[in-house]
Structures are given as C-alpha cells and as structure tokens.
Amino acid sequence: MAPGTGGRWQRTGGRGEGCSLPQACLLLAQGCTHAPFSLPFPGAAHGHWSYADKPAWSQGFPDCSGQKQSPINIITEATLFSPHLQPIHLSGYNLPPSEQLTLKNNGHTVVLQLPATLTMSGSNGQQYQAVQLHLHWGSPAGPGSEHTVDGRRYHAEIHVVHYNTRYDSIKKAMTQPDGLAVLAALLQVGPEKNPSYEHVLEHLEEVSEEDDDTLVAGFNIAGLLPANLSRYFRYNGSLTTPPCYQTVMWTVFNQTVRLSLDQILKLEETLYGDHNKLLQNNFRLPQAMHGRRVLASFLVARGPGVPSVPDDGEAAMTPVPDGHARAGAGRGLGPGDVLAVLFGVLFAVTALAFLVYVHKQRSHSHRTHQPRDKEVREDDSHNLPPVPGLTAMEEEDPPEGVKENQHHGHEGCRG
Image 1 (cartoon, rainbow, N blue to C red):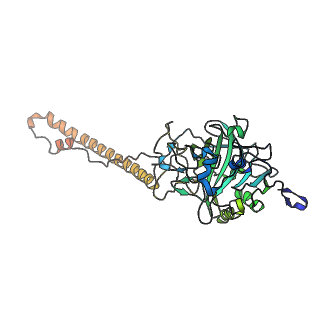
Image 2 (cartoon, rainbow, N blue to C red):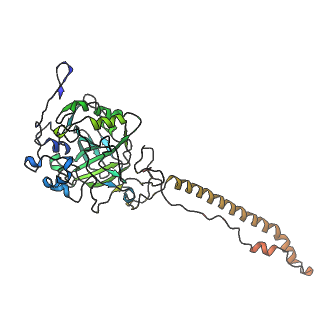
Image 3 (cartoon, one colour):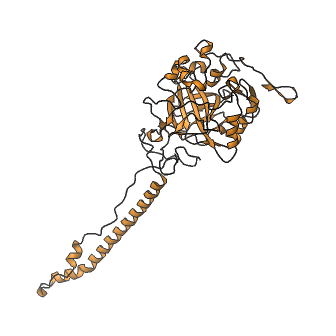
C-alpha cells in the first residue's frame, strides 16, 4: 500500500505481483521492491507450503530433512562456553522517520523489509547486511516461539535476517555454508507496552490479509532486540521455513524482550493467511541436533528459582581467564552458592587471624620464660628441676583451626 489522495492508503501490490515466489522470497530476506527473485526449485508445487503440513516440507524442499535443521531446543547445561564470542555490533539500525519501510503479510508471517545500510558484525569480524525481519507467534491457547530453552517455549520470537557481504547478493549467499546470519530474540509478556514494537504492531490491521502491504516510518530497529547483545547462544542451523537451507549462523539472545499482553494478543489475532484463516501458530517444532553443539558467550548460572533465560538484562557477564571453550558451562553458581563462597572466605579469614593470634601468644610466652630458664641453667649449684609446664608449652600442638571450604565457580547470568 502507498499514500494516496486525501491521506488515505492505497494498495500498491496485489496477489502474485512482485516476486514470483513471495512467501519464500520474503522469508529468505529478499525484498520484492527490486528485481524478481526465484528459487532454484521450479514449479508451483514447490512454491506452496503450510504450517499445517510440516512433515511434507521435505517432499518439495529436500533440505528440510537435513542434519542441521532449525529451530532447536537449547539445553543450557550442555552448552559450551566460548570467550571468543564477542558482543554483537549493529550499525545503521537507527533509522530516521523519513525512511519508509515496507511491511507485508506474506501469508505465513509479517515481514518488515530493511534497507541495505543496516549491518551487523560479530566475533569473526565478518560483516553481514540486514535484509528483513519477521515474527513467529502462537495463539491465545499457547506460546509460539520457535526456539525453546530447556524445554520452555516463549510467547513469540523475532528473526532479523542478514547475509554475508562477501557474496554479491542474498540469492547467492543463501546457498553458501556461511551465507546467512539470523539474530533471534524470544518475546514474553511484560507489564508495559513496548514502544519499539508498537511501530510495527500499530500497522497490523493495514496488512491483515495475505499479500497486503503498507509503509512504516523509520525507527530504531535495534529497539526490537534485547538491550544486552553480549549474552547469546550460537549454533549452525537452517532457515526454519522452506527451502530450509542449512546455511544459517544462529544467534539466539539470552535476554528476552517484553511486550504487553495486549501487544501479544494483537499479533496473534489480527493477521490472516491461506484460505482466509487466522494466522496463528506459525512456528516449527525443535529439530534434532545430530551431534551439533551450542556455544554460549557467557557462563550460564543454574540454581533454585533461576530461569533458563532471564526476564531482565541486569546480570553482568563474568569474564573467564582461559581462552578455550569449556564444557559444562551450565553447571555454574546459583545465588545460594555465591553466599556460601562469601561466608567461606569470611570464615577462612577469621580462622587465619585466630592462628596468627595464637602464634603471637606462644612467642610472647616463650620470651617471658626464657631469662628464668637461662638463670637456672647457669646456676648448677642449685641443681633445680625444670620449671613445671615449660616443656609442655613448647611441645603443645597449635589449636585446631576451622577448615577452609574452597568454592570454585563463577557468577553467570540468571540464565
């Protein structure tokens, strides 16, 4: 849709216009505002798929039955801590209101096209260009994030799709092993409306039907992601929709993003897809790992009452001195363990002070009796016996101290 006379919006694109395969095109992060983009799989039968028939995806898209599929269930205790995973750096994400972005309902999700000026870079120094973002959600009956953490599914999930700039285009990059990079954040209900998401959600009624599109004024796209971009999980996977290319470097942020309940419900109850059905539960179930490992940029704390993914972003990342990935990062310190360490250290200091005090007392007592002992030894004519108790004091074992409980651990996220 585009501005028309009298301030009204008019449709600029209808069903079948633009890309020859709009659903897959948008989900693969290729905008339809430029040259038409087509998949290497010919035929209309390969272009249609449905969330209602996920097991059949591999019939038209062979990669959907591959060994590196996404999403996955992230088991925090099985993650590998890697200090080489540096904070994600975003560039050009803060767009002025004069920048007009296309928002479209492609029948599977709602997609916001992003300008080429948005880029991200990470630990490997490689730059990735953003192309689009889209959402996955459930229904009032249940949550709908694609990735789960320790078996927990969140209300919704946002994906910001990028491609590796070493390739000339998204079309070429998406078939390369290192071609795509997706930033993912888990969304959950919070007490207040999220103003960043409102930039998108307030336009959903304008794109309620499949193939509807409208224009959205530019805003800070980074506001859709967590504030803390240094804590995340990383693994190699695939697109979560056909054609399921296994060329995605996934970054799943540890900190969630909060939306109000009304905002979540608006996402779940506004859009329509195939056959004019309400667009809900547009998520794929977790896929088998097939031996893949998940890296973590932080040490994951486990303890009573500590959720797998924190509700806030206040926990600080704990630096680790060694430079190697470490297994079992999930078995960290909980709040009770931290207190135990503090009390243990305090107890050890007290015991040490007590031992020093006893040592000084013994030294002082020894010096006090030394002259008399000398006097007795020099006066042989008196032939006096040793001073009672002197030998016992010199041979006395030091008092038993409190054993020190050494707790070795780390302070991780509330993760």
